[in-house]
Length: 288
Length: 345
Image 1 (cartoon, rainbow over the protein chains, first blue to last red):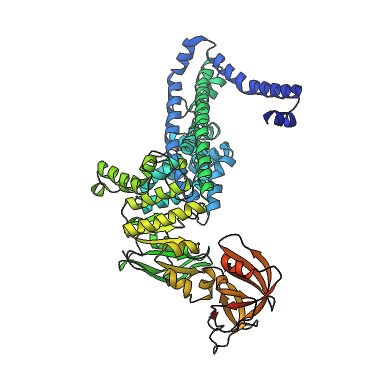
Image 2: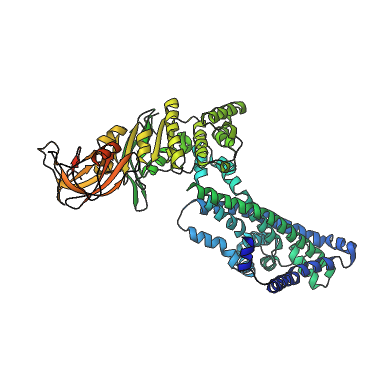
C-alpha cells in the first residue's frame, strides 16, 4: 500500500532532494545560523566576560523586571483567559462574537500602537495623565506601564487556546457533576480543569514566551531608564547600540535559551493537548 | 418521592418546547415520557431535574415546591443520553464522585465510600472493570456506570434521558430488561425519556405520550395502546392504516366508505382479516400488491377499491391457509376500528 501511494503521489528523487535541500538551507540560514551566532558572540570574549555582563546591576535589574512583568501578566491572563474561554465555550449570550473579536484585538494591532495607546491614556499629556500626576502616580515610563503593555499584548494566548477545546467538550459533564451535588468550584476543579489542563498549559507557555520577549509595546511605554524601566529585550538593544556586543549577546542568549525551552515544552504539551482535543472529538462523536 | 409538574411552559426563542404541561408521577413508579423528537420530553425531564428552568409553572417533589432549587439541591439522579462520564476518572472514581464532593460533615468515610462503590459495581456487574477509564468501555458498560454513578448518592428520584438511545438493538433490549428488574428491586421513582414505543410499552408502569410540547395522554401501557384518546397516540404506538370515511353509528362494525371529508378511521394492520369471499359484515375490496413473509408475521401491502394503500399483517399459519398471491383480488374485513370524529380532531 505504502509503496503504491509513494509511486503515485511522490516526486522523483532529484526533485525531492532539491526541495529538502532548499528547506534545510533556509532553516539553517534563518534559524540555526542566527542562533549559533547569538551564542558564539556571547562567548566571543570568554566565559568570564559572559558571566560578568549578566551580573552587572543593569542586566540584573532588566532580568528582574522581565520576570516581574511576566510574573504579573501571565497569572492575570491565565485567570482572564480561562474565564473568557469558559463563557464563550459553554454559554450563549448576546455580544459573544464581539467579545471574541476583542480578545483577538492585541493580535491584529501593532505592538507599537498598543504601547502608544497607553501613552495617550496615561502619559502626562494623556487623558488620565493630569489626574495621575495629581495623585502622584506614574504609569508611563515606569513599571506599571510596562506591566500593562505586557498584559495587553499577551491577552489572547490562553483564551484562544481554550475556546475550541471547551466548545468541543460541551457541558454535559459539568451538568452531571452539578446533578451529583458538586458545587461550582468543585465542578470546575474536579471536572472542567482536568479536561483542559494541557490546552491551558500550552496557552500559558506561549503567553509567557511572548510576555518575556515583548519589545515594541514595552519599548514605547518604558522610556529606557537603565536599572529601572529596562526589560531584557530593551537592555539588549541599549547594549548593542553602545557597541557592547558581547554583553548584548550574553543577555540575548538568555532570551534565546528561553525560546528553546519554550519550544521543547511547547512540543511536548502540544502533543498532549492535541490528543486531549482529539479524545474530546472522538468521545463526543462516538456518543452521538 | 412523588413528582408533580404543574402548568410548565418553556420557550426557546420563538420555539415553544413545553406548552402548559402538567404531569403527576406517584412515588415508586417507573414512568416513560414518550414522543417524537422535538416533542418536549427531554426539556420536561431537564426541568424536573433542575438543569433547565421553566418560564412558568412549578415542580413539586412530595408536594414541596422546588421551582427555585438548582439541580444540586434537588438531589436527583440524572442519567444522560451520552452518559457524560468524567473521562479523566476511572469507573470507580466516577461512581464515587457524588459521595466525594459532599461537604465534609456529610461525607462518608473512605471505607464507607469504597463499600458503597463496590456494592454498586456488583449491581451493574462490572466489578472487575473498576480501574478502567470510560474510553475503555463499551457503550452498554458506560451506560451502566452512568446509572451506578447516579444511584451512588441515593437520590430520591432517578431521571434518565434516552438511556438506551445510542446503543445497538441487542444491548438495548438487554439493558431495558435490566432496568425494569433494577426498578423492581430498588423501587425508586423513575422517569425516563424515549422515542421508542416498544421500550416505553415494555419497561414502564405508566406512559405519558407527548407531542409538540403537550402531553396527549397519560396511562398504563395497556391503556395508551388499547384505548388511545387522540389520533396522535394511536398513530405513534404501533403501525396503523388511516382511512377517511363516513361511519354509520348504527352498525356494530361501521363500514368504511371512502370520502375525503369524513372522519378519521384507524385500523392496526394485524386487526384486518383477508378473505376470498365477502363473509357478510363490513368489508371492502382490495388487490394484493406485495407480500413479505420474512419474520414472525406476514406483511401484505394491498390497494383498496378506492385506490388507497393498506397494510395487513397475518400470522404465518393464516397465510399458509389462504395461499395468497400477488395481484389477487380479495375482501378485507376490519375486526376493530378506531374512529376519531372530525370535530374531535
